[in-house]
Image (cartoon, rainbow, N blue to C red; front, side, top):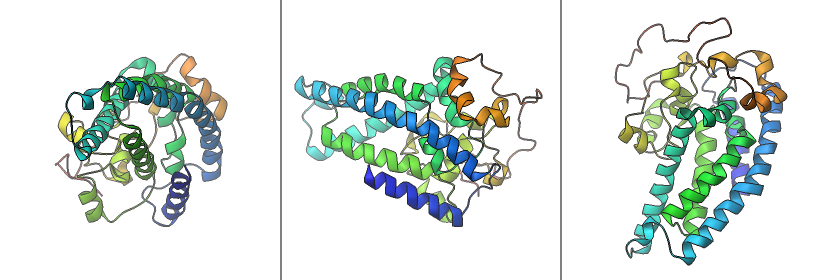
Length: 280
């Protein structure tokens, strides 16, 4: 937890000097909203997700139960398989949060942030975190991951979520190499686009391989052409704490139309025609 906090602070400071996308809203106002939402996120995680994970870890170890217990594996193979399966499961969970209307009601609170930076990584509705506790039980139990592998994956998961939500500009050549393995700020920035097709791409959390495998990878949109947010929830009052927390329980708008009824589309095809080559 301390290491994650230090990384968050470092990324927050560094992204102020090496900025990837221009801000559209005042930073302090956004931070107040994101911190308020994240406080409830933290409570839900401590009260529900962590106990759920610990119960599932004990249960699968006592049986033993899970995919990694089907055959006797060397320690290194058990660790590698468990780590990869955890990340693949999170790919499917993230995909479900976009494709299942009930789950999207809650996940949308994360996406209506009008800018994208490290603080967005903490901005999840407590309802989404509550629902994820059930997913965690299924995920950990079916995989049969060991407690120490789970702890290592959680550290990598949290560090990567902070990193790819950051507004950190990396040298494009370096980021292109990095994005062949892990999710990067430019890659995840496209996922937060107001263009529906782009929003429904790049679901990976740690590794980019799952998007490549499932053909959900989209890298060829330059960051200066990405407008962050969800079109229907771009009014300033939508991003206030009470509105954001109550949003999942209210009648939903047509997500992909702006308040004046327009559909956000890309006016011209990307200059980079190769969808799996990261644009600057």
